[in-house]
Amino acid sequence: MTLHELTEQLLVKTVTKPHNPTVTSLVMDSREVTEGSLFFCVKGYRVDGHDFAKEAEQHGAVAIVAERMVDVDIPVVLVRDVKRAMAILSAYFYHHPSEKLRVIGITGTNGKTTTSHLIESILQQNNKKTGLIGTLYTKIGSDRFETKNTTPESILLQQTFAEMIKKEIEYCIMEVSSHALDLGRVRGVSFDTAVFTNLSKDHLDYHETMEAYTQAKGLLFAQLGNTYDERKMVILNGDDPTSSYFEKMSAHQILTYGIERGNDIEARQLEMTPFGSNFQLVTPWGEKQVHYPLAGKFNVYNALAAASVGLVEGVSLTNIVSALEQAESVDGRFQPVDVGQSFAVIVDYAHTPDSLENVLSTIQMMTEGNIYTVVGCGGDRDKTKRPEMASIATKYSNYAIFTSDNPRTEDPEKILQDMVTGVRGETNYTVLVNRKEAIKEAIGKARRGDVVLIAGKGHETYQIIGHQTFPFDDRVEAEKAIKALKKMEKDD
Ligand SMILES: CC(=O)N[C@H]1[C@@H](OP(=O)(O)OP(=O)(O)OC[C@H]2O[C@@H](n3ccc(=O)[nH]c3=O)[C@H](O)[C@@H]2O)O[C@H](CO)[C@@H](O)[C@@H]1O[C@H](C)C(=O)N[C@@H](C)C(=O)N[C@H](CCC(=O)O)C(=O)O
Ligand SMILES: Nc1ncnc2c1ncn2[C@@H]1O[C@H](COP(=O)(O)OP(=O)(O)OP(=O)(O)O)[C@@H](O)[C@H]1O
Ligand SMILES: N[C@H](CCC[C@H](N)C(=O)O)C(=O)O
Ligand SMILES: [Mg+2]
Image 1 (cartoon, protein in one colour):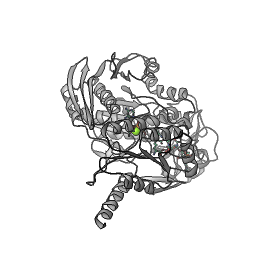
Image 2: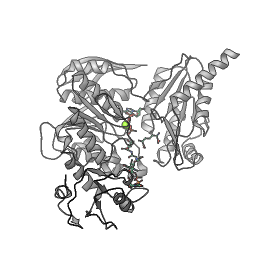
Image 3: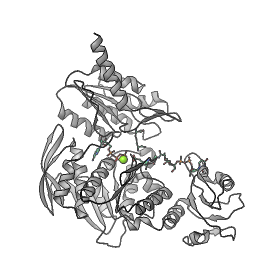
Image 4: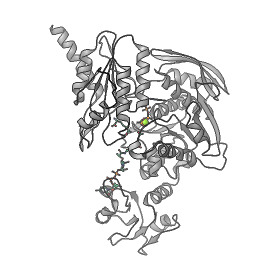
């Protein structure tokens, strides 16, 4: 594709030189530039991509897209907003692949990864070819690719859609983070269905206020468009008050789901069991009893959101129920670590006050024994959730151990001090900065019938301390600690 063909997509721009080179790739990182690349200068949090224009030229870039002049001898396309131009040009470069897929976007504070996997299994139950983009990986059919962000930057996103088309994928199920919406990573994506899970406190380091955070989430519904299209659908959690705000954001049909009465899709006669739930799935397409194997009321919401998507996509109630009844827990979400010990150990990705409270109240229902919680809060992330998470941990556990999550560039001790400010008079906790030691301590305390919850890192296989990433896996550490304990018991 030539540079002129691409720049014709942008109405307002200045191109500094008349040549019309052939563009063979779009790139936003100078280190990934190859011969023929069009390089986008993106202002980041740490550095400014404009400072890498020369390096991009040296590596073979044939033109630069920038917001201000840069010192290079190749054409510079000056635009008002590089990220916006990047999204528009990426969609064009890859021939608008999202228009050839049915794209299901899921947003909300918690439950996106879980819900997207449930939707995947419902659609697969109906023999649909699916792709998935989210926190754990990008999946095309059954091939998995590692990802850095929950929702990738526009170039990678459009490239991924194009790859999905090549592999004859029909549906792309994607998690859409508030950062991605705010930073314009999904601009130009043609969504067909937009799903909202729930809204609670998170990411206030980035969005600053709950209002701004809500607005960012609202962009997904706004992006669905305001010209009515019967094939487009908005699916909202009717039990979450924020849904009424999203209702106003687009012109399409709305389907609500919930446990309370008054929703289109409902779970009635809900009966929670220690390891799942039973409920009557009541829908405009009929009703059916469900024996659902994922623990916690919050997971019933995820099932309802996924069932709603299945129903609007024409999957039969029978197939939906069958997929839900076979649901497997997602990597690092309420994942048991079981090496034959007499107490339960659960690793869960709860890293917000709301998810921690949900998980702990579910555990309370499961056990009469003691609950030991190992929990921390990420550095360089929302500080307001720290005291709240500590307070929830002490409230619902017999004993809590506050430890490091990913401290990143913050002082780990300082993060723990922030957490401790949330404890109001309770003494059932300790602070242990080393996560490995904290896990050992909790497992050492547990006796027959107790539950140890290790919260916050779920599927993560690393720990970020400073600018370094070290291998670390809660499940591996828990297993080691249990085995060491068993060995000691044998030695006694
Ligand atoms: C805060 C944030 O969103 N940061 C994202 C951002 O990084 P950054 O702003 O630090 O970028 P930077 O290092 O300053 O670089 C600026 C530009 O210069 C370029 N550069 C840089 C160095 C160089 O030598 N040459 C060069 O060209 C970079 O490629 C980039 O284009 O751009 C990167 C490239 O796309 C992202 O991977 C990175 O996400 C980081 C990993 C991150 O942690 N993001 C989080 C906050 C996030 O987005 N999370 C949401 C999920 C949240 C949730 O659901 O809970 C997500 O969607 O992942
Ligand atoms: N519907 C829900 N409501 C509240 N909490 C939930 C819900 N579903 C899952 N959780 C809790 O939140 C944690 C994260 O779940 P999940 O990974 O599905 O969410 P996510 O929205 O993808 O998170 P992230 O934004 O970090 O990618 C789970 O480990 C569980 O503790
Ligand atoms: N997507 C979330 C993940 C948080 C996970 C937690 N382990 C942490 O590092 O804070 C974020 O980037 O804020
Ligand atoms: Mg996720």
